[in-house]
Amino acid sequence: MERQDEWVRVERTQAFKDLVARKKGFIIPATIFFFVFYFGLPILAAFTTVLNVKVLGPLTLAYVYAFAQFAMTWILMHLYVSRANRWDDLVDQARREAAGEAEGAS
Image 1 (cartoon, helix red, strand yellow):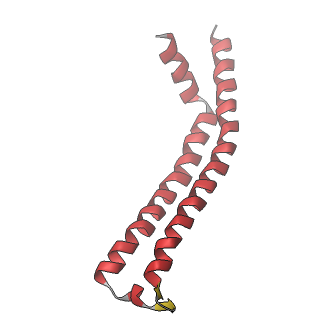
Image 2 (cartoon, one colour):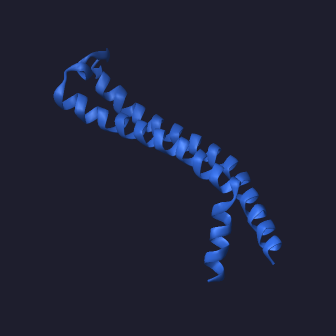
């Protein structure tokens, strides 16, 4: 039961609540953007002629869009990693707050 009590102490800290809120604030919009962008290509290609526009020689917007998905994935990954590095501070703060609460309870 000790491990569960420790987790409950961590969950109750303000730093942990801030961590969860910040993660949700990034992950939910990023996921929505990813799915809209990702499924936009097959939907636009299947049901419209928007991507048939030639951009450069035989290269159409469909190819540009498809290659942009690689860039979008890498950009989202870099944004996530940079945010996650900042979240580490909140994790450490939550640990300290939970440890302080445990010491106060002893």
